[in-house]
Length: 368
Image (tube, rainbow, N blue to C red; front, side, top):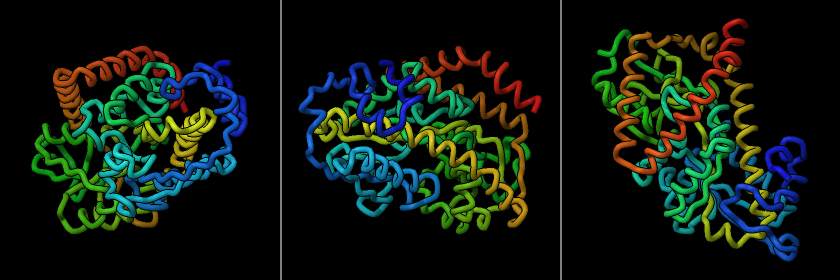
């Protein structure tokens, strides 16, 4: 049975049981035997995250991921959630799961670029794939295989588990009229977007989300991008900066991830392995839907109740940032073989879908 067609038509609980048929993308597990499927053993795991506990959209998605896995497994796989700094600091989640302190983690791949150069591509690239397109690349374009190749040396199995959709360009304490306004700017912006800002003359800073407001309000940084209206409103960033810029050139559709300790994963019966996979896919769908539902409402609140001033980046600034993006990506590909293959795969997928996107969603949105 084709896994994707089945998931599209079956309930999650049914899918979890039947996805143990051969051929699923669960890190190369063999077909399960009857004893593995019927095991009544209970597993108690921990998941560490890069997000504050219960933070809307991001933190709550992890809570629901754990709840889904518990329900679908009928209590055989129980996962306790630890927000950032509750068990380990946010940016130590990757190492904590790699060494077995926790069995699972949740975050964004670009946080690990110092360990895996290709990782920053796997969350999405500036001016690159949208949320819908990156999901297509993962599941039908070879992306998931490259993802798992990148994490394997660290004893981890990654699963796409969330997507923010297109983000905002960020919060600024001054207007951006031309490229000169980016020079000398200290901005919280991770991943490839940060390297692009550096080439434009700015200084990228990577800090956890929980520290954003204090850093921006206190002048430690001059600007910050976080996610979009829904999450930015929750952090109160409108109290720290006046100008809210779009589009989110740096993150057109950021994929989030669940990474699992490979040794712990191997101890699970195959039906529980499948439950993790399906629950992660459900989390991607649910998070994407939540952001789509809440961003518009939150934007109205920011503009109409808090007096935020919405601004579009000038076209010449976006053009310059796009040129710098190409330079950064080419340099990254030249320096790392896996990054080169990953970037080539993403470019190929984008080229393959570009015409359809133009005559499909893009044309429709323009006419709507």
